[in-house]
Amino acid sequence: MSYSAKDIEVLDKRFPSLKDEFHIPTFKSLGITPPESKSEDDDSIYLCGNSLGLMPKATESAILEELAVWKGKGVEGHFKHPKTPWLDIDLPVVPLIAPIVGAKENEVAVMGTLTMNLNSLLCSFYQPKGRKRKILFEKHAFPSDFYAFLNQAYLKDLSEDDLLQLEPRTGEYTLRTEDIIKVIEEQHEEIALMCFPGIQYYTGQYFKMKEITKAAHEKEIIVGWDLAHAVGNVDVRLHDWDVDFACWCSYKYLNSGPGGIAGVFINERWTDQKFHSKSSPLNYFPRLAGWWGNNASARFSMKEVFDPIPSALGFRQSNPSVVDVVAFHSSLKIIHKFGGIKAIREKSIEMTKLMEVLLKRSPHYVKPTELLSRGFTIITPHTSLERGSQISLLFADGWMPIVFEQLHSLGVICDERKPDVIRLAPVALYNSFQDVISAMEKLKASLDVASNAVMTVIT
Image (tube, rainbow, N blue to C red):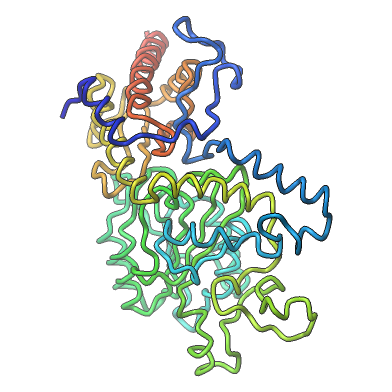
């Protein structure tokens, strides 16, 4: 497939961005000396939304408004507020995040940070019994997840032997769905819980969540998903797929700001008080609890009675950071304006298709099945439905640092994973198809520099 200049123009008209609603880093703000064809006030090409999303222009005013309330009202801002009292500051966010993760509003809560939430959910959902005590997850998971799983096992007086990790076949970069399901079917008597990422952070693989969840449930395995790289990126349907729990951060594709407030999904059956009263002296599912998850009408009665809100909100522990919540809210409004997750996904599929076509045209491209002695290959799945808005490039020895440095000097902001991977992530909200074209032109120039540098070293 080929793309003409007219094709790119048509695509940008069909899939417009909301770039003007974001602050785009410039050569000047990044401290980069612009090349001759650029000025210091020109925008960079930001392809790093899978690591940290850009700042919406509305975020600054949203935060300043809350600082003004704090300044003028002090503690009374919790109850008397020109917009949303701080007591309920997170509630207007719930209807905006629920459709992004394919959940009912009673199944999501805005709270905490990603790994804190993962640990909290594991305390409830990971209940090893007898032989059925292992946690199934991927080899080379994001390290924070590994640390959480490992220490959850230790907390249950178990060991690293109770972690069951699955890795790709020899010579392959991504996991096959059939291999995951095979392990579930063959070892289900030992697996208590499985937790995979919706999208693998390194390769960009989008797991077949529906199929995997169904297979695990058929073997009475609890299913959780880490959606750090999936939320705001692909159109997951947590409720329809009957997922037990999920958690995510919000600072990548959801643009909430560095370290921004995160979120959880808890299937409504786990917060159904009638369901739990049948098999437990408690009328609720035990969890790491706090006063912000307690019955809101009795929250300030200070009674030693835990009466959790019968929804995901009942898993909240403490009152959320107001500044974090309103920053998050400002971005979610832009996503809603854009057309929601379906519009984002539709555009991102077309953007990565374009990027892949251009990458494969490079004389430095090497097929994944060939020996990588020069140039680069693509380790992200080549099928659009099996990847998110990310393409990961694996480079031959010595190439990646040179290419990364050259791209940065040309104003292309992307992500390096040492020693030899660069991740490119076009974001539908603020990237254009012309951005992709320009970035690939600069990548070509950077690859040429790397090729000459490596050949000079060899000779």
